[in-house]
Image (tube, rainbow, N blue to C red; front, side, top):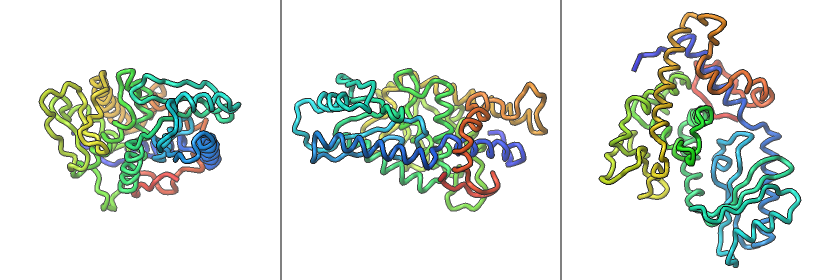
Length: 333
């Protein structure tokens, strides 16, 4: 890989990426709104099944959600009902706060969907999905171990959205798989030392991530396994999916098997590396012209300026107080 030093341009990119993460993170008020919604939905569910336990999973439970993200609920317990999804959909339909109610009965995991009228936040309800709760615990542990992980997740989810490949049913990659790609990358020796007091530059890590998965890692023949020091395994014979990744919460489950268009994910990473490298080299001595924004491809993909203007309050509240690029990253507020 091209040896990119932590210089003025890399530090400025790093600065803008941290601003972006702060801007798309929820404010104190937005967090309170979600807690209220969770409380209202929990009460509603327990009106039907008083002994049921209501748990959260997905990005909200992991603490890596954005203000427009949905909330995933799972109802745990032996429910005295032949059709719990239908019963819940009916109960939601009787509540004036619930809108756009759907019961996707024939999905691999049946799910009840609705949108809260008060907040516009979408909610998904499933039943006895304990694997999702295991994943929350597992990923929270890594968020503690790698403070930079949350930044990379937020940035890369924004990139997937910009490329329109953030949904498996569209041939892309889901956030569950993306998070494990990032964790596996951070576990590669020499990529990120949690004990080091050296500066962390998120832009440099992002470039290395795109380079590794776009140009180095052999998706054709290898399989990813977390807690293997980033070292890939050979795919088992007969594996047909392009991205193969062992589910750390459910051994034997390959979480890449449903991603039918995964090749385009690698191509997106490859293109991003080349585009960012080109931007970096062009702008080492400042913008080449007014027609070429300083932030180039990342500005095009993540809409820095527009996002930061729209979310100025969030950025002010969430922005870590340190000199960007020259101290260890700390978790977002």
